[in-house]
Length: 347
Image (cartoon, rainbow, N blue to C red; front, side, top):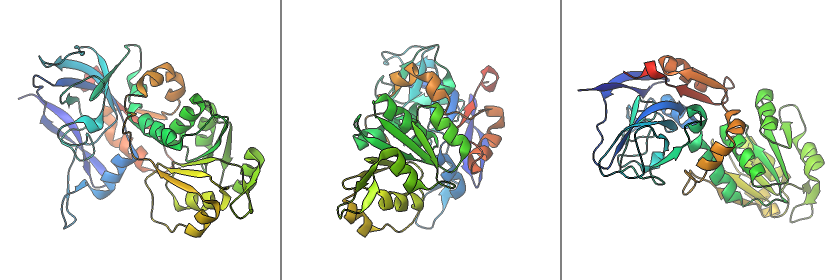
């Protein structure tokens, strides 16, 4: 029986275990993983010690990683449009045995990944041979960011604020600028992330820990009013990619009449000033995952690869996967961590 290394969630750390290497059926393909990003969802499972599995609060270990990129090493007899050697990204939600890396039987930070019912455009997409695997692994989070921008329906004349200069916020910034949006401001409290925001195309940045946010937004986006005529910033769309209660407070305090707030970050508990929302007739839009965007983004990710590559702060070899997760678990230590596999990583 051939085995492979698989990364599983444990309490505040990862376990690297030997598991049986998948054998593809006639409709499947087997991918040798070459890179996989670490997401906030992965660290959430580490804090829990795995996946909650019952009313008693017990957890079960699960394989991690839902941002994989790799190359096909086996193709089932009934699979069309794919060949050994193709470089591919996977749709984590396309697996038959549960979402890859999020409670399903398969994980993207494994040496090999089974693509069940391999179908181009549904469960897998091919990218060019000259596209780096680490940048290709951004496909899934950039689909999340793209969905948030699509949900915002931002127009070229709009003025937009993105809260949070992590991978999703920065990805949204890139998509907004590629969409032709006139002015995009990124707000964060970490100087290095704000520098990255400017590097990927933000028109302005605000350090909300040291600057007057309201004053800066009025300076950047002009002045407007809410439904009661009270002065507000002229921002049209806010995107929350930070997930902290202070973002909702800031948006409600600054929202003009008919402004929109797109919520893409996983939210911490907090109270929302509904009366403040009423006074601006603020529209709250939730953005979850990527219902249609998972491969909508692939060609543009390839085209603008150098821009997206700036989102990766750390590339850590699979042999040091524990260190990769410690970086991801440490607030402010890293922006985007990608685990990389070389030839020696596969047995």
